[in-house]
Amino acid sequence: MRFGTDVQIRAVGAWTPPALDTTAQAVAEGRLIPEVAQRMGITALPVASDISAPDMAVRAARIALDRALWDGSELDVLIHTWIYHQGHDMWSPPHYIAKLLGATNCLPLALHQGCDGGGLALQDAALRLTADPASRKALVSSSDRFVLPGIDRWNFQPSMPLGDSGTAILLDRSDEPGAAFSLLAVNTYVAPELEVLVRGDRPFADMPMQVELPFSVLDSARKGAELLGSVAYDHLTSLVKATLDDAGIEAHDPRLRYVVLPRIGAGGVATLYMPALQDLLDVEYLRFDDLTGHLGCGDWGADLNDLHESRILAPGEMALLIGAGAGLTWVSAIVQAPENVTAQGS
Image 1 (cartoon, rainbow, N blue to C red):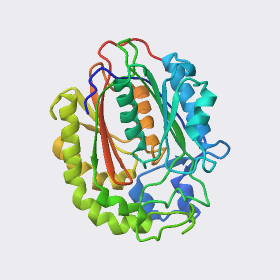
Image 2 (spheres, helix red, strand yellow):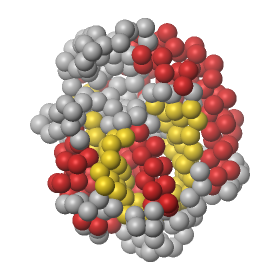
Image 3 (tube, rainbow, N blue to C red):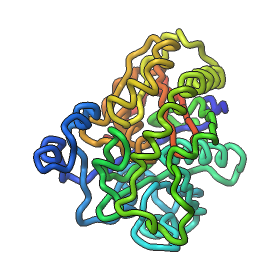
């Protein structure tokens, strides 16, 4: 899906709690097996002890709004995405976030898809801005807080520990200078036969967390690993080729400098992503997960925030972001640093 330079990522923001649960601590206290820790390649996870998940999203959004010099009341659309409990049942977190931001004129929406929610919400927001002339400014937010007894952050998925965070991405349709990135293209590839990777052989339940606590996908993911591995290469290859085509560039385009890898730990990246990506692209590969682990839907906002804060993209250069989520849906996007650089917020 091509957006070209019509949709700008005006600003990004991320907020992670300062407290860290280190891998060394988890191993020493018997909460994590040393062999699993080695496969993860993660140093520490951010842990939120005194703030809710939606409030982390609010903090991240305020960072982004300050960088864009926007007021919350200017937002036309707000899409919030997450994978785990937001603190209340039968409740709308995006309306809460909109209220605290003063975004009283926007449409608050929820996208509860899986770990690819950040990428899919980015695509949805861009589509809304493109299709509706009345919608000019959008916020994509994410947040998650993984706590016991519901979730064991170190042992929820094989070699993929979970960190707490809030993230925010602001988009607009504008040719004004000062944007963080242009969103050139977003594309998806769906493999519904892989929904079993989370469901496993559990019976259908009548209420959340009824079957087991803490909830884990260790067994189902292990059983489905062979199926996932058998299709990942072909599906990722098709997805990346389609995204490059939508962005109007070739795989060897010198402006495509980086691939930002999903925050799923060293083992998962090496097994599921690198074989296909390295056969297609001769670029530098970036991992930003050393001190965060997997942030669920927040990987996308956090990756864009790290790209922005590191300033590693020169004007006109591009990066490809990629990830997947339960279902299974892969998402990839290509962003470009603006050609004409104007001073941006820090």
